[in-house]
Length: 473
Ligand SMILES: C[S@@+](CC[C@H](N)C(=O)[O-])C[C@H]1O[C@@H](n2cnc3c(N)ncnc32)[C@H](O)[C@@H]1O
Image (cartoon, rainbow, N blue to C red; front, side):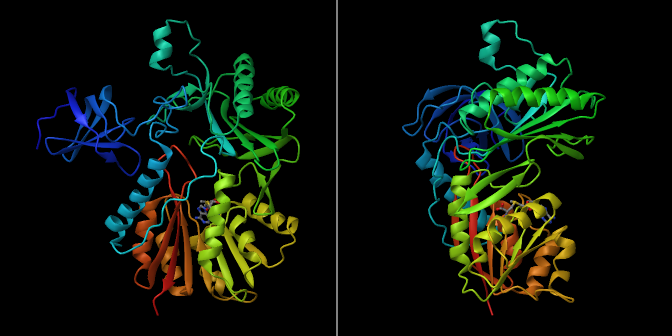
């Protein structure tokens, strides 16, 4: 099929956006995926990969603009792996997301008769994130525009975000409308200071170097800010980090705490083996739905505080609690969903693998005077079945809320749910494809009700869903 070869330049009509975010075109019957193009455009593109079923191409130029494209607002658009849909009007982004949820459910779960609601927009389209994670690198990646200036850039140090599709390339973020203008200033100040420290950035090529990750967490409702710096182990490293912490505190009074973690892991994840608070309590406080939440450096918390409220409200509605139910909150993080539903349930049992998050969840209950929630720490697949048995157990759940990571629920967790057979399951998911897989496994005992997509990540292809499932018998 088709005469396409790698390296060829071809003209393409952009038809639609695919799940995952790329634009879809067809050339002589072959599907061609493109980054950074908008439906309705005609583009000149170079083929960069040719497979049996599809090809991938890079946009070389626009031949005809789309009536439905808009000007990206960020200077890093195109290079950055972050907001890939800035050129798509927000209204259109929402309807593509809804369509992708429907397609996933239809193709991967065979759910053809499921009603997918309109995507609920994020209350904020920019400055919506409460957390940004920046990576250090001993090589700075330059954009084609920066290279074209001919300037002699120092390319030996960078802290920023990943180049689109490249886990090994980092560019210096100079502007970003995801978190706050002040957080970008914090990033710049950290970069300048760390570069001058004389210690090199960590590199995955040799697993040498000191600076690894800079995480900036900013509670939107309280203004409190937590800096989490992850470094490699190094003699005298703590003193160097203390210097950075003091420097940042003197510039930014909103930084209420600074946590330093040392990681000996080869994997590039912003998680430390050992952590200490350089100053402040080691956590910040955020407010959602009139509740207070303590968030520490390693705890999960929904990154869009504004949109999370709508999501949790939907969980509450779809759970339809009467106050007599035992509810299990699977993958509960810092207990945000548990706390939101606690006043409508008899009791709530939360399950979470990260011990710090469980501690946060317990504190969050005390903070809010909630007395009917308990939390279990551990890998869900190992602890779920025993939780309903033995002395002091809550017994099987009437209603389950589940909110797994992107990989979805482990098959043994789904098996346990089928055995426990709660009357209702409210499934929250940040990945429609694993959601569809999980729903199809649950379909032997559960019927899929309403599906409500929520946009927690404007200008990206990510979409969150809340789905209600009712036991068939
Ligand atoms: C998408 S987050 C949901 C958190 C929470 N429901 C919220 O809204 O803040 C998924 C959570 O699952 C936890 N997790 C991941 N794998 C797990 C496992 N195998 N067992 C228990 N919890 C797990 C993560 O640490 C994370 O807190």
